Image 1 (cartoon, rainbow, N blue to C red):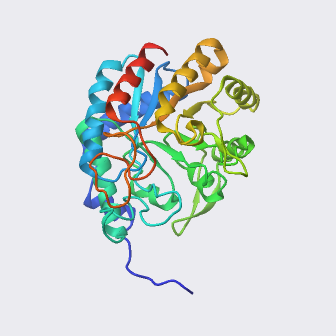
Image 2: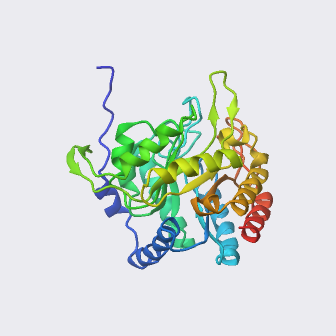
Length: 342
């Protein structure tokens, strides 16, 4: 075997015991969780914004950003629920070098997964304890979910993971809302099949155990655009796309049919500054058609303190080290615009 065993990683129970969720914060989180669930179950007509940096690379800058979000949340609470993005496993697209905070708590140093697991839990806890906003994270590695299972408010399954059986089965045992992205090919049947699978119960091997799950009825779709065989981006947020997928989705008669539209990635042609325009178009489509209004529950937006992205080794505080993001000034304006035009 070409594997070198370096050191034993503590179990989730051991890490949670070291870095526990305070009891008074647990009650606050449960209230927020109910509010988020109610939106997906059509009990609350507020709009969801899953928003934040492409990759959470630095605790201080991420929490400074979330502090700003928390201030805006107070002003738009009647119409929007904000879920901060704290993506702790997000690597560079090629997989070279930086693979997210869980691997490298300090991007300038070598990987250290033991310290990384503690760092991502501390960051999620700090955000939750200081700003009372359970965050979203991407389940890039299904086993890592257990270290954050008690603090997350939302989970996304990425375009390259949505076809993976272990991801689908793991989601079937998760209690929080989980968004399944369409694959990079754009094949919507893959995304819908993932939702069908995750909404059912399963028996499988997980973390060394045979486990049984009951299914996750809050599993839903995320549209992020596609890439063709020539590497060209193909958006899927236009009215024609939304009405087609909404009808197909509705015909499947799944639990809580819901769609989140990702305004970046292939939908923006990798042009982060297009996100406000895309958000406005989606809002117009919701106003025009009742089915779209019902099924489009929110947007996913990539945003950070500073706009754009930085190169390797630049060490610019609050600027994305992976995909380019909107800056705070544009983000704040966009959130207020969305609140006024839902």
